[in-house]
Image (cartoon, rainbow, N blue to C red; front, side, top):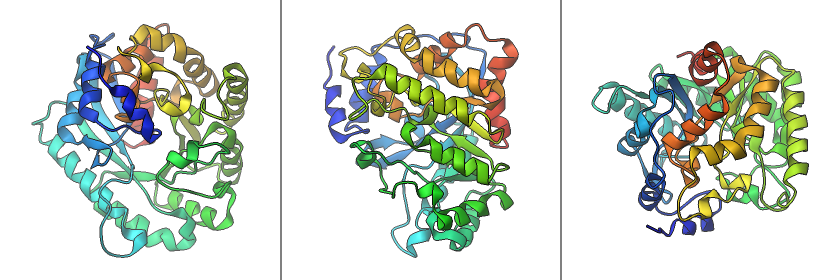
Length: 351
C-alpha cells in the first residue's frame, strides 16, 4: 500500500494530512519491547489547525500504539489555540487554557491509564524583559496546577531551517540583555526553560548557563541537529561539530537534554520518503551515535527520552520510535533506564 506521504515535506518541517500519515506509520507497526518499562513522555504537542487535527483521541491512539507503558506525558507549546483578542503578550495564555482542558479529559480515565498533559509548557515572550512577569503569572493560573515552564524558540540559521519555524527571531537572541531580564524571572517562579535552537547555536546555550547556572533548562531534541542545506552532504563533519558542542554543554549541572526529535525533517534523514516506514532496528542503527553521545555526556539522570509527536510521526510510528530508543539503551542497567524513560522527567517537571 503506497501513500502520498511525501507531499508532507512541501511545508518544511510540517505535513499536510495527519490521517494519511497515520495510515502510513501503521504499515510498520511493532509490538512493544520491554512493555513494562514506565515511560513519562516529556515532549509532545496537540493542535487543530492547518497542520491537521491532533487532539485527545489522536494522542491517546498514539500513546497506546504497540503496548508501551506510557504513564504520563508533558505538553510542549506549539502555538495552538492562542486567544483571538486581548493584549498581544497575553494571547499565548489561551494555549495553556486549551491544553488544561485536554489534561482534564485525560484525568477522567475515559481515554485509558495514561495521564496526558500532566505537565504543561507554554510560551511567553521573554523579549518583553521585566514586563513578562504578569504573563508568567497568568500562565501559571491558567495551568490549574499543571503549568511547569515556558519555551521561547530561538532557532536561527544561515539556511532555510529557521524559515519553517513559527517565529522569526534575531540571531543570538539568548545573549540579548532584555531577553535575559525576562529569562531571569523564571527561576523565582520555579519555572523551567525549554531551549529550542539549532546545533550551530549551541554556544549561546553555554553562555546562558554560565550567566544563570542555577536555572532549570532543558535542551530540546538533542540540541537541534541540522542535516538540510547548507549542512547537508557532510554528515560526519556535522556530527563532530555537534558532538563537541554537546560535550561542552554537559559541564553545566543545571542543563538537561531531551533525547529524541531525530525524526524531524531538519535532521536530513530520508525515512519520510519511503513507501513503507522504517523498522525500529533501522532507526536504532541511524540514531545510535546521537543517542549514545547524549547519554555518555550528560548521564542517565540528565537525559529525558522523548517522542516529539506528532512532528516525528513524519518518520515513524509512536510505538516504533520507543522501540528504537529501547534498542539503543538495551544494555543500560534497570536504574539507568528508569532515569532516562521516567524518573528524570518526573523530577525535572515536578510530576
